[in-house]
Amino acid sequence: MIVCAGRNEVFNFAEPMGVGLIETAINLTRRALFDKPDFLLFVGTAGSYGEHNIFDIIESKRASNIELSFLDDNSYTPLDNVIESENNLAKNDTIVNCSNYISSNFSLSKKFNAYGIGVENMEFFSILQVAKEFEIPAAGIFIVTNYTNETAHDDFLKNHKEAMAKLTQYLIEKKIIKSI
Image 1 (cartoon, rainbow, N blue to C red):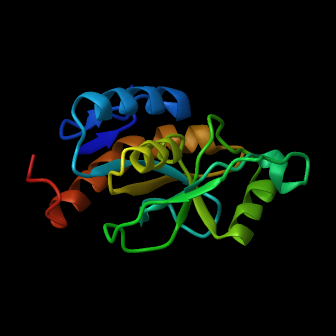
Image 2: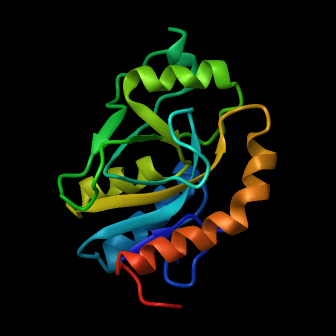
């Protein structure tokens, strides 16, 4: 089963799950309870913490939920904040950080690189958490639309349409989906 976020990030070959951690968790849990898929592939966009370029495509099976305050030792959590799907569906180890907020301080967000975290996306941590709970192998394929800096939102908007087309073409070339 291929899933995506929703609202303005919808593909005709993927089922929208919602935007952010909460909507995604609720809707995917509902879906898994009533019609559990054999596997989950999340497709969407991501912001780069600096090591990936605009329009790079990243495959991952690992996500984190680390807030910016954690990077400056201003918070902690008793929860596991990194999760990995046990499968061979993704070809690299890029960790995708997830939050309901978009990072816009590039000097601070670059600190994620020290933890092996390369990009951010709002939904993927929820996808992997629900997949783990229901024992569903999962992976994600992302295309970078922006850097996590002060122009993140403007760059996302500027690059979004082209990124969606490039990601769709990548999925066709990898024979994940058929030509649309």
